[in-house]
Image (cartoon, rainbow, N blue to C red; front, side, top):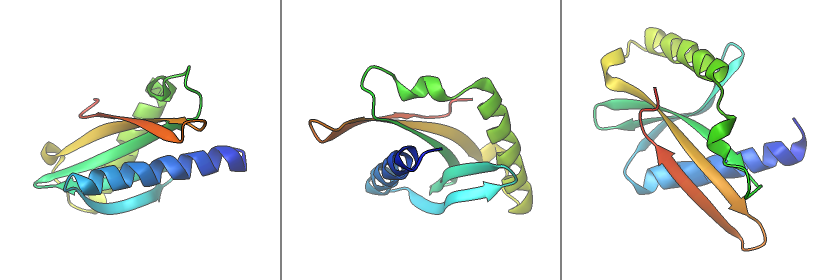
Length: 119
């Protein structure tokens, strides 16, 4: 991954984190590595533990939600299961969300979409 791609990803995660905080979510973890998978954000909203995958794209013609493959979802599920086991979290109170961010550098704007409970 190039440093430019990593910078765009980090910027997107910062936008997503601020979005969640502004809506009353508590951030429990950020960039948590479990094996070879990283969970971008783990948040708490009342009794729910929410695992959030953040996809950021600087190309306005490509929607970032298409960047999440079925293989990535399987890997995320394994990481989530491991996290829940080690932290004694009831799986009936978890969900996986996707936040997509499309950056428009020329207008200095970002479009954010929050997809709840994607699996």
